[in-house]
Length: 187
Length: 164
Image (cartoon, rainbow over all chains, first blue to last red; front, side, top):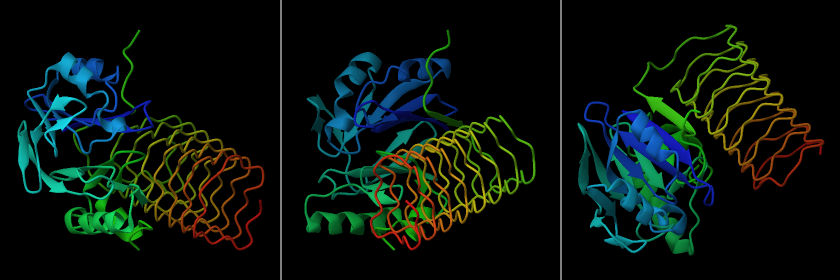
């Protein structure tokens, strides 16, 4: 697989390109901005942006979506809700899946930071949005939301193999094993 | 003029637990590589580029990362006790659950670094830039933060004998 991490100027949010080396089909995870480095990266590696996945509907993860759609014309745009940033999206909820070239992702619902938070899980790689961070978790509005978030992470992310990479909405990447063992919000 | 590149690029996979111990790797480019549980013990990586590298669980004891770029790298669960990070860049670097006893971060840039739950007993942060670094529940006993700049998060950290 081909992986690229873009640290955006908007609120220090992350966006990622994840692509199949065989079919050259690429996924963009989150679109807080249409980063000017995405197009030349796709071109340099012969990739076609086929899919966009929005992990949750917060401005720093969606505001660039209209420009991304206009520029790259992706075949599929997915989110939990059916519409974000004024754009229609196909709904992905707990247990749904989508293909990316020769691999596929399944979706788990990881609410708490927002009600619509989802995590995409590929073999060995997860994109968690603002649910789980390296050594932290996304902010929540209420104690109930926080508990919902911690429960969802334990159930759906910490059940993955320890070596699974976790790429997050803000800050550095991590692994399931590291977060399960050392994240101060869980131990 | 080349096109601007992503902050991290990784293509394909490579074996875990590679052995670079004791090697002179000054100025080497390990950016974006997955080097989980690799052994860099006693290696010299002065000025090396490790931006976005995955070094989770790596053995980094007594390695020299002076002037190296470890921005967005994952050092979580790694052991870098006695290592040198003088004037290194560790911006947005994951260091959760790491062990860095007596490590030297003098003059390093640790903006938004994540050393939560790390054991940094005796580490030196003199003149380091620690704005927004998250030392939540880290062991900072007998550390030296004299001359460090910026507001960091020390919630629940152990700070016995810390010098500020």
